[in-house]
Length: 170
Image (cartoon, rainbow, N blue to C red; front, side):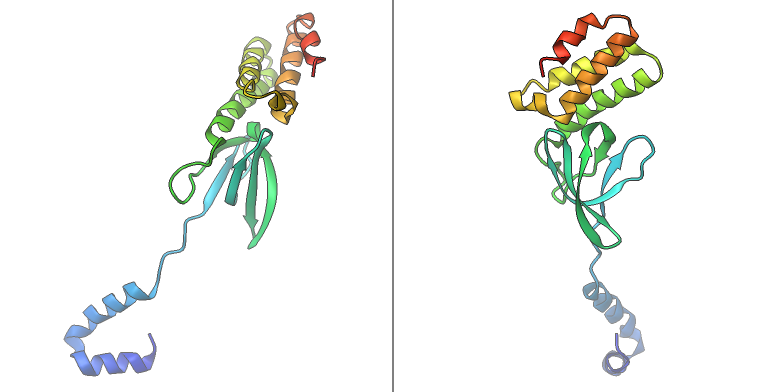
């Protein structure tokens, strides 16, 4: 509030009514900025501030804001731990299902890294089965990760013949 307005209000209302006028004026003058929407990543990566997200077969195509600049970035499903809901309090179409499928891929990957090939293969198989919604989804990066994971875990278990034929079909 400028000095001129302050003096004018104090002359009109006096010192007793001044605090009530100041509170009412202060509330109208400012509005709170919109909260940041975050895409939470796995494996210790810092979250990304996003403006817009769209589900794809390979992951989330996001408009990422950093240092005041916006850029497009694809974040693969197995690298996403969660996404804050949009302004209306809901996630975009396909995002929740993609995160669930990505969680299975992430579990398979981490289990394979720690040497638990049997549980890793089960997670990769579940992720691949979740990709059966369209023939095009078998050509996605998500399906390739699942097939590679199934192959690597089967080889680690000594059962490479079980999946090598399936992996060459795509």
